[in-house]
Image 1: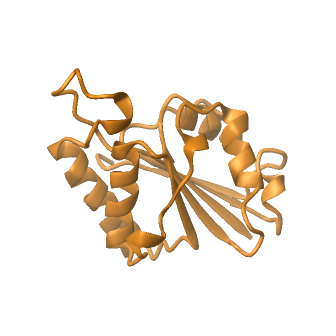
Image 2: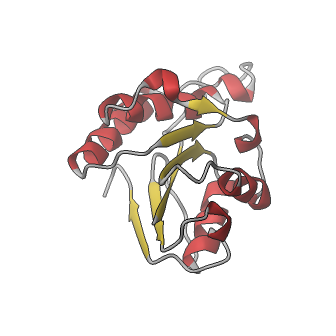
Image 3: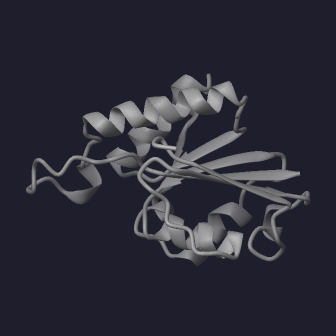
Length: 161
């Protein structure tokens, strides 16, 4: 069984329009929501084997705050440039290239790409709100099957749910 978690970054600040996009931090609501989602995931015993984040500060901070709440070492959150300004095929390539020993993979990134990928995997239109999570379980031993077979189970959650 392989489990994929897609997490859209929490709400980012737009206070400084001169700040480069990659350096936009989370705003207060975003900081609160990321911790809140992490606590909710911990309550449901969600424990990824690997967390991979976009290099954008808002995505990395979201991943690190969730990691802290689920007792995943923050220093083990990997940063992958291909999760920033990606296309669905780029995201699938990251998933397909994941070590087969990893059973539960969490990716933290951006819209519209994450909603597009979630929609493709779910076979329905999905619009991930900020800090929302989409989870997909696959009856497979290979990450290469993600996107080619239907998930055995899907679940969605958001801070305001």
